Length: 253
Image 1 (cartoon, rainbow, N blue to C red):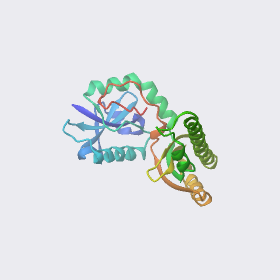
Image 2 (image 1 turned 60 degrees about the horizontal axis):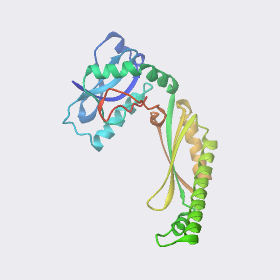
Image 3 (image 1 turned 180 degrees about the vertical axis):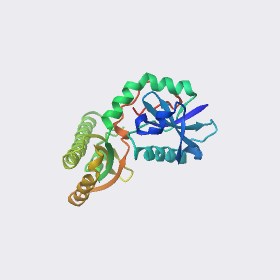
Image 4 (image 1 turned 120 degrees about the horizontal axis):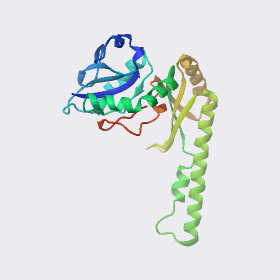
């Protein structure tokens, strides 16, 4: 039987598992395609799974169901999410993957216990958009003009990076996260988007939300969106090995 995997957690978070060696159903949770979700005991860990058929479509709705199951489990325990689409072909492949990565799983669970992820999206004007567009060397330019445009474009790119870095540093000072992951990209409307994940103590969520309210009124040149608390998706060390087929484990651990 194939198993679709959602996340890993500690067995001790589910006392009912202490009396069982086989998977037991989580009565209040349904998974992809409405399939029954199970707690699958594996040593000191529990894998949250549901039965899987190759015919089960892994579409956008399935991705939403995947995230929902993880969020439900996160309400009661520390979780290490698997990447959407992780399927173990049978019981042995699931046990083997957990067994070979158990130390890493346990280390990450200990590191992330009591932590949550807050997600900030910060949109700001691209200070250099038009200048960079004009400075990009044209295929027809040659010689000194080409080199001048190339240097100007590189200088403007550094200016853009400096502005993005300054905003991210300001965010760090205002929110004081335990850890952070940041990406920066240009939107189709020509703005810069900073995608910021902050790791915080779960008990500090309300304080973080208050800081966000202050920041959103203080930083007039930025548009900010906040979501969370979420399971710590961005702060789980990725596995480099695993026995799952299809997309393989995220191994969000």
